[in-house]
Image (cartoon, rainbow, N blue to C red; front, side):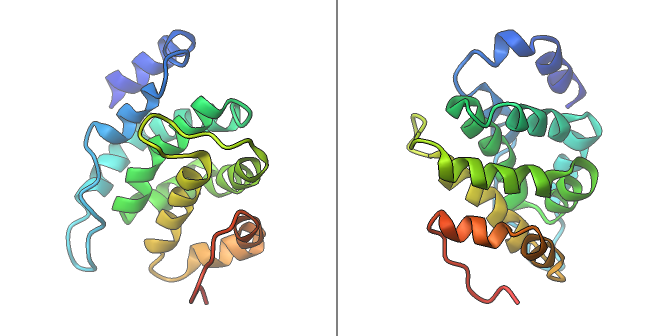
Length: 169
């Protein structure tokens, strides 16, 4: 991860002009499904390495600086999604080390206000940002993220985007 994150930081301006190049942060390993309780969190170990290399910080910076650029907005949320949905560790890392809750709550608001955009595989802004939020909620062992999202008015923002939530405590 150190080499990949360093490469992206060094050549940021050139790389971010290309369509959806950030997906390498998710696509390099992919998502083989969240582990069940008691199973090893292999993708979590990969996510820890990405965080230690500054990768989540980089992705969230790109996201926060590009809410009005649909290509980079969608690419950044896609880069997070496999980690958030497929790992128990990534949601904690992104929330605790990277101010990810605030950034993604803002992303929900911006996605709702943005014109519809879908990248080549058909995934849109609203889908990707809500997939990321779903990863937080899906891997929420003690309802910590539900409480944070309620306090941050995330659920209200998401519901305005047309998402229905059930059984969130």
